[in-house]
Image (cartoon, one colour):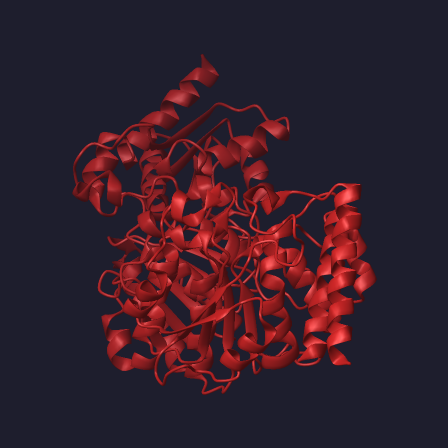
Length: 277
Length: 315
């Protein structure tokens, strides 16, 4: 568990460096979702560079494509490409586009326009069920994108076809680009809405590695139902001055802010190492 | 010419025959199996039809996901909804992500006639032409429908096939050659060339026959693939003709006519040229045939257009 927590600190360093170097990126959403990706790729999913070209493995579709820095970072650590390649992120001619693209090995589907990932994940899960493949499909949704009606179309289908091989994770960080979700377009009572659409729902602290592991190691949450993990996170998690501030959605740290952010991550790492003794 | 069946009926029968031999073939419908002539398919192969309800965006996204799972997927929905409501799914989940979904737009153009403009697809060539990585096909008869579906099956990139619901005349021998992007010369002549696509090809052919009686020799270029356009066939036709008329069941903006104009003008070809289609207005109320007649999309109307263009040349 501590190894995963240490990875999360390192991932935050890497993704912040990517964004700083490229001078563009979705800083806060990547910080809120990186713990979820960490647990999926390092603890839960059966997907590797070796089995990636086969359908017979676990699958991951990132619907909230703007948190691409977290995805590229975790895929590098999973061995899909060397981490040094991330230096070209968003540069002219780079295949590390500012939203997920299949040009990057390990990425399964091109996303970025919101409200698309869930339908694709439903199709994948349905196709694997038809072939009797015992693998799972995971998809990560932002909370702001839940205003897209297509998510609810896909949710109806997931329940209709009893897709218990599908796990939908919502990065519930309460913020979208304009402000708090509840002020922009109210989502609550969100868990009740998902239950009403036929999911089996669990809620966790989506930045707490042990809670994520415990929930995701017990899939499906209920037989014959798609699972929905409502992961309560903090947008910008891990960097004090980025946490819970809407303007950091697509903001790049200044030189001073970047140094401060790295020093906060150093402290977090020291605290983790200290806790070991 | 022998009257065949509706291209949609041909679609239903062809896709069933293909799917009986390959269990990886799936059709996905949005409460559209009846209008897609897939009711027999649903009865014969219930495990190979996926119903998503009236949800076209979801239809296309799911089709992309099923394709990612290794399936060969025909996503079937009225062309008017498939290519407008699900346009972003077509652009991103199918084309940009490169999942070779076979998008089947049923009851296309003004097939739905008096149901009105909500149900017409007069924009689909225009919007889909501007989306990279998509082949856009409008079969003219049962043979082309069958050939296009078969060719789409193992095509490595996404294909859009546009089908109507009126019985069509057979324009080809059963052993004719069909290839995406290769226009077919149905009739040769050097006065006027008609470049037509989909259900208007037969009208161009009938116009050419009518004009032959008056001593005007016409070439009919069957441009079943609107994208990629067969530029070589178009330029060859233009250099052999005195005038060129394009014909389509689509808005006169951005469709086959626009595509031909782009090619001709940029190749430095100047030729008396007319785009025949639906003008930029909400169509008059009526059946497909009545709408065609209203806008001069008839053998007589097309012949008259051709004669008018030729008169300009000789004047």
